[in-house]
Image (cartoon, rainbow, N blue to C red; front, side, top):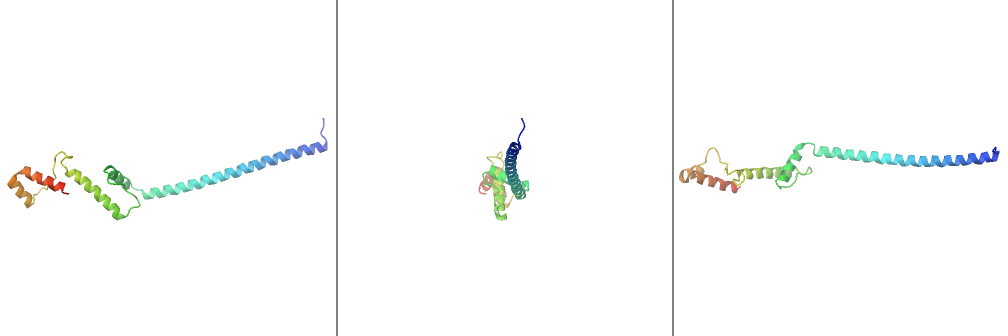
Length: 145
């Protein structure tokens, strides 16, 4: 059976309409894909910028190491945005904490930090009351710190 001219025209118009619908759908999908790609590219750019800022803020291990020590000794946390004075105060507290632990005979095996050369007061205690009194005096001095 052969098609008439009008049937051929109708068939071709239907195919053309389907092709236009397909093209429109593909264009819509393409636009959505481009929008998704642009969103991903923008997000990647934002995350990269944030990563660079984070690297610059904590570029050295010093801040992380001090933060770790502060947290472990329950003295707080090190923050990158703190001023020099705040950071120095926290570092001083950390050092004082470690000195306090080193001077405490309860945790250092009973040892007492003493100067190699005794001052006049210590020399008088040693001569008058002996070594044990000198150690007790030094322990009292450490606990006053």
